[in-house]
Image 1 (cartoon, one colour):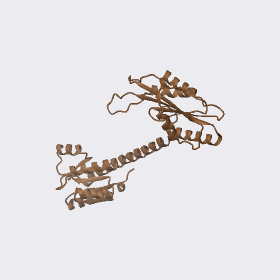
Image 2 (tube, rainbow, N blue to C red):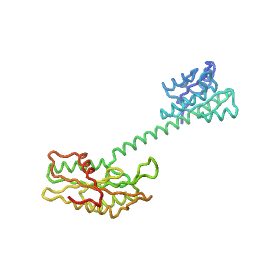
Image 3 (spheres, rainbow, N blue to C red):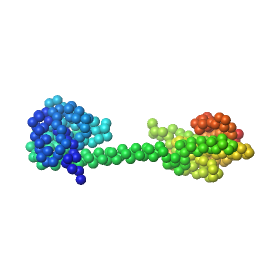
Length: 313
């Protein structure tokens, strides 16, 4: 349970006497972390020096009133991923002033005639809400960072279950190293499915889930146990394999893969957007010097041609 000693408070009033009266009443109620100031600008300075859970401010101040201070605090909260409880003190407790205060983002509105017990209860309530909000914000930030880290380190494409680009790069590099040490060659096939213009302005065209399933299933069907298939990006897929030094490179495995995809994938997505399939291959048994993964993928991209025009070479 949140203790009053854990709640940090800033009291803002242009009259120093009023600040001291409020501070004294809060201390008698069990609060300990209380700072006072006589202006909104000084309050923002204190907030930057040390975060506060609750700001208790006079509604009417000569330079910057309580509502203007509330706007400043809310902007500060947004910039710092923080929530600060705000309570305004005033002798004017009309319905209109209360509505205006809440519209500006004030959490509570207390009459200056309220006794110290009511004021302490309101401050505690605002502090408890602020603590809860900030714990949720911190947890959300930690989960977001964890998700980003896990996604960055993941080797699996979430949409297809295939390996992702990070995984493919590792596998292809391993194949190149193996061929350098034991002989043989490495081959790669690439498939790209281009999507027509998106129906929504500014929205990037995406492959539908049915198309992704068809492509990944077709690629898996024709592969041998040691072959590797992966999704390189939103629209591109790749196959990597090795072939023995004594054996000739056989392009027909890729040809079967391309034909399978072309046969089982619709030429439009669920919304009728046209799809265009491109494919290419790359192979080599010369590794002195060994090509880099980026070089191989780049050469395969440069050779992409419509699937209907593809010929084994």
